[in-house]
Image (cartoon, rainbow, N blue to C red; front, side, top):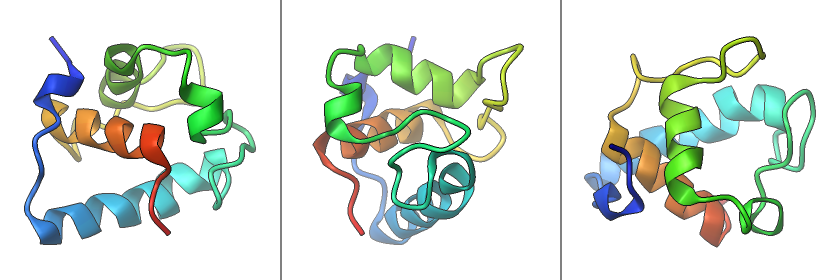
Amino acid sequence: MLSSALASEPPPQRQQELAHMVRQECGSCHGMSLQGGLGPALLPADLRDKPAEGLAATIYHGRPGTAMPPWQRFLTEAEAAWVVDRLLSGFPE
């Protein structure tokens, strides 16, 4: 089960890789500044009412029937939770 409690800190190099993935891969649908596009905005104000566990599950498993793909081939559940924690606190530039 996904949980933000799983959001342990990945090593610094992996954090950079994940940040790059969010900016490039996620940004291609959610906007390069994460303010929305094909996909919804991923800014803290837009996500604050959504449970972190559900957001991490969406990243990890995708959303069938939508353009949101599963990312489980590219990151772990803990890394998905780490990404959510960063999105909720304002993803770094």
